[in-house]
Image (cartoon, rainbow, N blue to C red; front, side, top):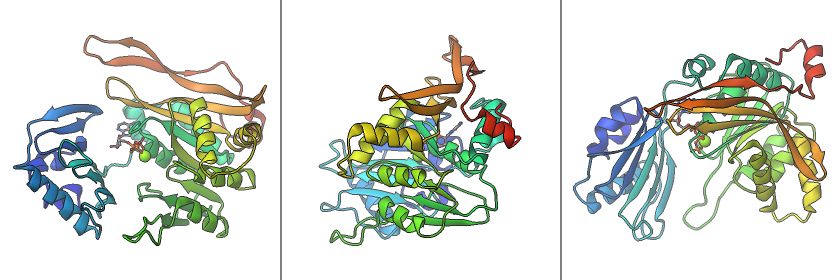
Amino acid sequence: MSTASFLVLFLEPVRAYLEEDSVSEILINGPSAVYIERKGKLEKVEAAFASEAALKAAAVNIAKSVGRILNEEFPRLDARLPDGSRVHAVIPPLARCGTVIAIRKFSKDLLTAEKLLQFNSCSPSMLTLIETLVKLHKNIIVSGATSSGKTSILNLVSGYISPGERILLIEDASELQLRQPHIVPFETRKPDKDGKGEVTIRDLIHSALRLRPDRLVIGEIRGAEALDLLQAMNTGHAGSMSTIHANSPIDALYRLETCSLFSGIDIPISALRSQIASAIHAVIHTARLPDGSRKIVGVAEVLPLRNGEYNVHDIMRWRTRAIGADGKITGDFEICDYVPSFKEEADVAALPLK
Ligand SMILES: Nc1ncnc2c1ncn2[C@@H]1O[C@H](COP(=O)(O)OP(=O)(O)OP(=O)(O)O)[C@@H](O)[C@H]1O
Ligand SMILES: [Mg+2]
């Protein structure tokens, strides 16, 4: 079922945007403030709901349709709909402007390498480098801000895993669309209304490691599971990959540090840091530029710590050259004057670096 046909049952006032393919997100801040994202740009639109009661009823019905509860006691809904789109809703009084709903429409068109090149979201050399990183079983983190394209890029990166490998895929809400034949996908479970039955990413990593993975692919790292992933990466599960919310490749490493500490482990920060530096081999950083375009703005290698600090080196990056009167950004993808530490390894495997 398409996004439109499922959600229009509940959200008639925004039907036009549910049905328009170029709209990727619909953000409802109370009955009379609707924003949409089209081609990476946010804009306010005229659509409105008849009343707060009508909007809240719509949110409650969306929750019911997927077997979930949205009421005073459970005032927040985080749901994936049968069509793959994601809905988050918060009702008053927590949401002070009326019921708030954000819909991330499921994009039917997978962002393939060809499409990303066509959108100037990356360069052919970047794709070659990323393919080599995957083929060499490097552990990769895709970083970036909210909605910068992390999941889409993880989808691309995981696409380079060879079809013969056994991939254990763990997600909070199923989003990735891997095409390989040997995939074992898992999804976490939220606690029920009595707070029971929760299954976390940590639990699923624990299971995955006992299910003979060749590769672990984790949708997103947000908390203590960072530590489990790092330990897996450091103990023979090379070639694993995930995404993390961060503002730069180095910030991604600091975020992993913070997330690992959520687990309550008691190890010196210096030890944790060296574990991170040896576990992560490369960071692919994504961004949504001010003109709305999304790009891979950097591919960086993570080197061993230097004086106790992270040592990250760009291999390729995007450089903005000019911003036109219309706000359009021009620039190019640069290959940095830097020889990655895995050059020999790539040469031996006859894999190109650019
Ligand atoms: N390079 C790109 N060009 C055009 N659209 C893109 C590109 N990358 C991602 N998108 C679109 O941008 C939206 C956000 O992408 P995605 O879900 O990958 O981001 P994210 O960083 O994982 O977001 P979140 O922070 O919510 O997890 C989606 O609608 C996706 O189709
Ligand atoms: Mg994502």
